[in-house]
Length: 628
Ligand code: ADP
Ligand code: MG
Ligand code: ZN
Image (cartoon, rainbow, N blue to C red; front, side, top):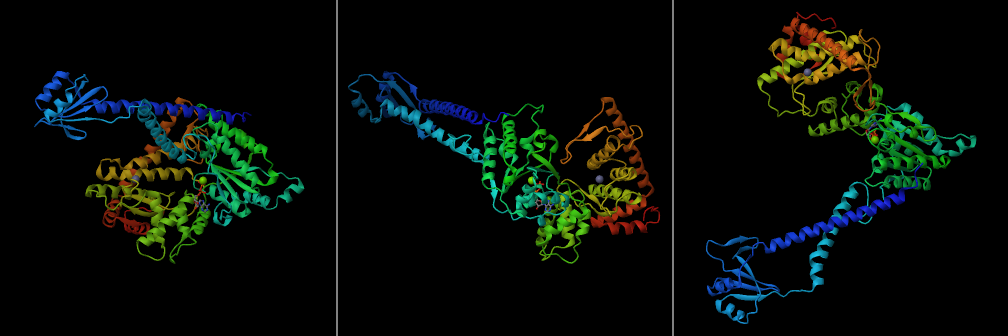
């Protein structure tokens, strides 16, 4: 493994930097000098000595400056002809050569002009210093300062002369203060990590029996699910120091810096064993080395260094390496083989109970009113990660303060959920009356489609108050229980619900607006997944035509089929969408009285609850409620 070439390489790059730096300063200085001399001589015009004498005779001269090689003549400012120079108002400047003229001084005095000679340090050394060395040093110093601050921001260090010197901020904590009690909803992950905690507590017990503990564990999961938190909790539980660096800290502009940071990190860790070494966002360095997008020397070197350090240290000393990533599929296979990160701990998005537990953890220090029901909040936040839930609790507390309350109420929490989903209410946006009407019918269209179909979730709230994240209004559905599977009928009903917003616009106003773009996107995605991933179309049976790429991020799907098949998928998707669109329109046409009545109510109230909605719907006799 090519790990030994780092120091020489970084030395070379230092030298290269220094040279290009000097060249830069020289160029700057030259440009500066040319510019300066242009500035000073720009306005002077050459005249003959006779013309000069003529000017003296006419008493037009204000001053005569005797320089080493020339006379610089400043004319008296003439009316209307004053030239506005950089230095203020001044007469025109002329210059002429020096001629041995013993009477010159007398003539100048006679004409009333002033004569002076600039006292100059004409020593060539001093003038060279003044025009070249001084500016050079100034420029060198200033750009050095700028570069240094840039370098600092990038986690590097040192002035212009110390590129590549390794002083990475290894983030070390004696005690993290975090324990497993602070991490909720990740019971399986905690269980797998418990063994590591035990090992750090009593390494003898494991070594006595001859067991080798995993050197490292990789925490894998979507952003915000608590990977970093779990790593800290392991250190907290085991009561050992916590050394951490983020993968991106290793990747620097200069080849070799990352590798030396890895070396440093492990050196420090071994001196302080037992301890936890945590490398966050490890995909930044651990990306597979054979990727097609061109190689990255620095990253490869860093990765090689990491691999060899992991092989090199003796795990029985009690150093455990934890890594975290949300893109496990891009990691180099070498990192994952036994003896390195041989354990994989999945930290996925929490389920219903998990969300409730996480809310409980974060709401510990918040004063709550009696009406708070965390189960409801957990139900409404399907798909939220721990970080979102922590955020929701905080938003709710902030809202309670804003309203001058001393305790957080359920309404604060529900509003916080909506803020996270749709953004802040935007009360100052003024919509025209006709726009409000369209939005109201659109939203009631969604709500009616939900209520009039069997396999749907109940309506929680309908609102036409615009939100900062772009929604002009929305209909919130809330499941009665957490579902892990969706059947075909449910998906079709969901698509119909999405399309019913636009459907209502068509049925009532006989026109369409741009307001349905988000609905269209979601409906199409569902329909496409039905065909390409869930095997729910007759035409393609159970062929997998697409697969999910970045499972833990919202990556795009990758197509696994031919172009022609792809076109056929589009046809199939189109037919699903058409069918659902027709169904939505039919539902709404049959229930126009209800649509009008509820939309009118919504226009008046701006926001109505699911109960109010259902009450209105039940009062409407024409409605055939299959579900209620
Ligand atoms: P990740 O590293 O997975 O992106 P973090 O560990 O940085 O996520 O989580 C960010 C914040 O979200 C944490 O500081 C914590 O407040 C909250 N959080 C995330 N997951 C959980 C959890 N399972 N239990 C409690 N809090 C959590
Ligand atoms: Mg993290
Ligand atoms: Zn809509």
